[in-house]
Image (tube, rainbow over all chains, first blue to last red; front, side, top):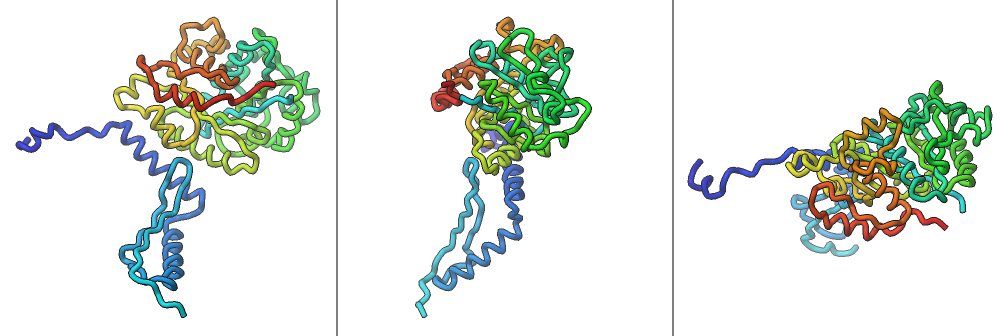
Length: 91
Length: 275
């Protein structure tokens, strides 16, 4: 153990309780998605369709666009973060 | 006032649905002789609630006989030998879950609502027809789980199914067989962990208790007042009190004050009010 290791102490052990909780949260999240019939490829389709609509009004930064599903208690939210470069001129 | 129907369900088998139903029913009937309680064993083909209650030798007719019109509802009801205000409608042992339909359950329970204040439904494991028959007339649902991964996962699935029902069913969480020492040593998920994952209101926590096996051997539920020293028995009695609107803080199964839980129960005012 080097000096730094001596200062910070041994690495904190991940308990089986933490592991169970983490694995379960992830599994249940996927279960809920499956029940909602929204597999990852469908989520990707949604992202692309959404972007094509938004691109009519804004010039967006596609590379920095993030679309995720976030979980809060018993609700899942679709969160899209789409950086806007500039407004497109109306026709 | 017509009686209320409470469903006991879990998805996974072996987490304590039948044990919880028997113990809570006995505690409810014992705490107030004016409350008439009926239990229905919905596990057609694999009945066990009768054994837990020590009533296995008194069964003449069963649920399927009633539904098929082979006897009157009253004839199939088995009176408890200790509590006159407690009755059991046993499952048939030789048939299967398809012997009754959800519609038949609704009309049967409508009839029972006129005779009883509380109807406790012990659902079978699984999410197939037996589950749907059990949910058909439920007003409240108690989701039983242990703090184990597969039980919590199945509980989540069942909660999702109950939430999707067109009729509003209130869901309550009952965590069974909690091992305080394992939670303390971080080898078992805690009450808070399970609640965070499932996101429904907590009704109670039952500690792991070896006496449950002894009580089943004897056919005498632990929640009977004679079992003063049993942790699980007391926890079941507390759940019964909460169901009738009495505020009872969570039992101190950790040997220390768990203030977070006490606050939880302040929110839980009265689940079932009697007129």
